Length: 429
Image 1 (cartoon, helix red, strand yellow):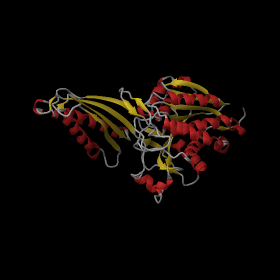
Image 2 (tube, rainbow, N blue to C red):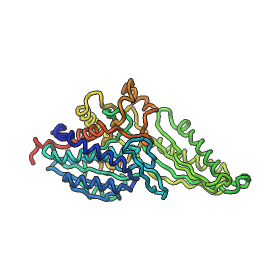
Image 3 (cartoon, rainbow, N blue to C red):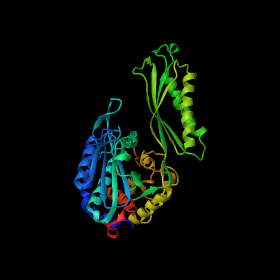
């Protein structure tokens, strides 16, 4: 018999003021990937105060809490902790003004532009209630506060002996806040989020004076040709019924207007939803980069380096149906929906289920003011996408409304976990 959700949620209302304050503090003090030292310290302190067995420094800056209450299933709950190099423009009284030093050594603004501060808050709320209501469940919960989701932190956690150091979970559960109306939850069985592959490209030219371009091989023009030609990959090499996205998110070359530089650097991101499309798009992008360099007379072949590569996030069909039913009971009819297609965002959460050879379920929960969606049918919203005026993840304007997002995030985690944890009242110690 599964644990009682109302019993697990007992005391949530009393904890909400503290969770709101925690969220504001985390939002105002974001940290870049693998630099989440302050956040990890807060997490570890709170878990110990709640009574969890805590291990710090997992995968560099990760924190893992383990709580066991008798014999029973092992459930993994995961939240990510890192922020992004984005300058916050929300105007909130608790907006971030922080800066940090990125992996290239550059000082950058830092913002929780993807909602990971909300994820940490909700999981700490769930861990507090699991510890306070130990009479209501049996089993083991492994709470993973993961570093560096934006740059591949899950593999770092696994590579740090995760499988040997902690109880082996039979189910992995995770969630992500997004620009849906508060109160809405969406998921799907099968492919849930796209694979992501990032490429660093260095183009080699031959620099010289801007007044004598005929003596040079201009890498800026080479880069421009590549950027434009890459726009044909999805439109001409991917089928109309398939999904892929190619984005050139960064291009840097030169330092002065009258000097043609020797090199140009691009960063390219590719999203795909099937192995076949993934391989096809990656090959097309690399082919175009090399071909444009050759066409420009580059003195040296481009350097192409893969980094931040995540596979498709795949939800177990049976476990997803169980979670959808549980969330519907907890949140009410008309609040839980099935995504019509794979989301083109990417996540490294699936790394845990793959490594553990356990089913996993990942879902999105809304954090946007419902008033902004007035007159929009939920099914229409899922089919047509978020209206352009709604700030989305990674935007400088993205910030979930605190209420009732925190409450729904905590409720969702516990409602899902309860389907595997055993009821304390009906299980012998």
